[in-house]
Length: 115
Length: 114
Image 1: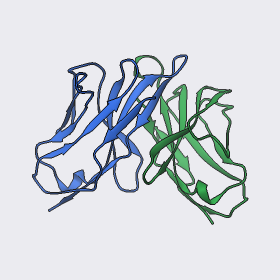
Image 2: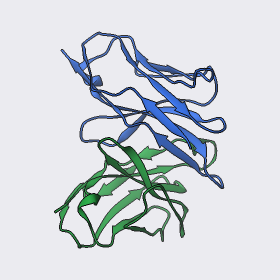
Image 3: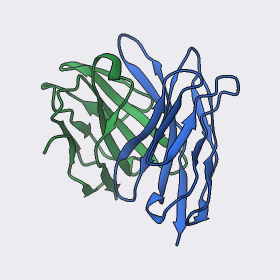
Image 4: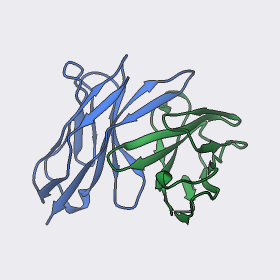
């Protein structure tokens, strides 16, 4: 079945450091790929997405490129801020019957950014 | 306010009690979903609904019941709560058409079963 594997945390960085959170996937067919972010005490928010190979999703300084050859969608940011402290989830979307799509999530990576 | 809301935000109950978690969205999205979030498991799908009166099981449906009489509401009921159902529950919805892959999440309900 479909699965997402992301690097285990927690990840602790200093402000302005470079961030990479690795994500690889296994899926039948041709999934769309997502990064969601969950700030403390809140629900998940869509951070960025990519729907086909070599697409780059970007938002708020975060980027991820859909790499079909390596089945990866690594999240990067050049200079993190304290406000980026959150849990980050990688996810993929595949058709699941009718017109529905099923989201499969990784287990999440906790990022803490210290001033 | 527009969006997706959940109530209550926090709930403490006892084993064997019936509990209903509410979810309401103002976007008229056709698809709605219930997930539970547990440490070490990420998010797991409990039930989903394609439209009013159409529901289907997800990955972990046992012990839960859903209904959807109106497009905007999707309540989740724990018929007889167990300690293993202590979790954070998230409702989500998605639009029809080309945007249906993207799901939008509510703020969550933290449930503690004693």
